[in-house]
Image (cartoon, rainbow, N blue to C red; front, side, top):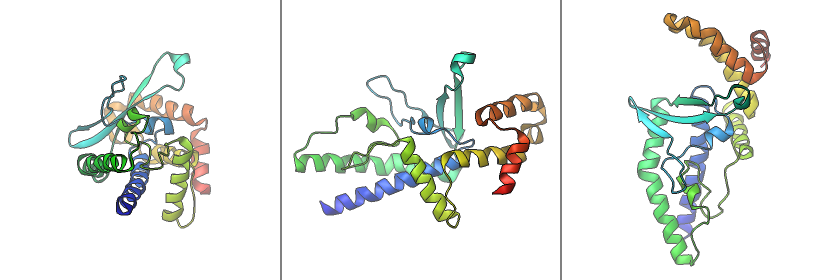
Length: 213
């Protein structure tokens, strides 16, 4: 049983790293509730799977409700993952997750405990941790991003808002729609206005912020 516990703890660590990989590689960073809402299967209570494969790329689809009462418009956002990250998701869902579920069922049988009461949470890509049943939250995601950026940026920890600021600054500098798709120039201002509306900062402020880092 100790070997199973050790393996499940390694799975938890993998999920944490995979979560950050999705966060930093899936385009404009999703807000924590969006990222944590990803389901890999439908639920009995009406929850819908929102991760798919399209044109050989893994994509997760979330709804963005900020400003809904002002515009009466819910934004549906598709975030495509790089092939390398998408393959990790596929391998995890295909091979790792079914094995983990069998191990957890075996543990419950041997230890004589009932299944975790929040069964619908198992449909999420980030379910409660095995054994401890620790839930995923914005605070946990914040801790993970700080941990991974500290390790990867020579001790410089980034929180969620700081990383969003950096990502928006990079996109404004290097990924303006008109520079790649001339036919979409009429979308340029609207897209950048949406970005500014989310962040509350203008272009000059963004580039100054990036220059100071």
